[in-house]
Length: 220
Image (tube, rainbow, N blue to C red; front, side, top):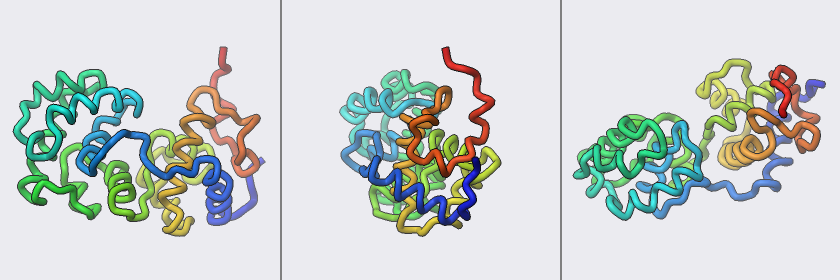
């Protein structure tokens, strides 16, 4: 049954329930600097965090910062990141964003959404993750898991990350954006999964209309 709570109250209640279950509001991507996190998030497109974490130690051993990466041959970078998929495009993005960091930001990762979005391969998800994790700015990080859970919860009925981001921003206090994003990400990653959501044991089941869940094919 669909919750009768207004959306602001539903979102704050979801955060109250999921926040303590997933209290570490930090990326699952291994990194030692903002530059490494930026590169890792670019690599995570259409790839799991675990696979990115297997690749980045070798990547950053060879090219540890923007200055080094800017001088790299995209073909050489592509060989290292091959297993993350779309490696040619990702390699061009890593080298390209590194060059822009050097040319426009002194080799440092910028601290504004507008400047981050000018970098090759960087969209709002990447920018929000970097801004929240590196600079403490509230960020709504709509990745694949957050998008799926948001649609099932009825936060937004269109499969558009920007619209989901706007709906959350309009109905949840800014102070909770980052924690909400990470908690819902973990919930989607391990409970409200794509093919076999754990509705029977879901801690926010009473708040969820289960949109689209009934149409999922049975698991075998």
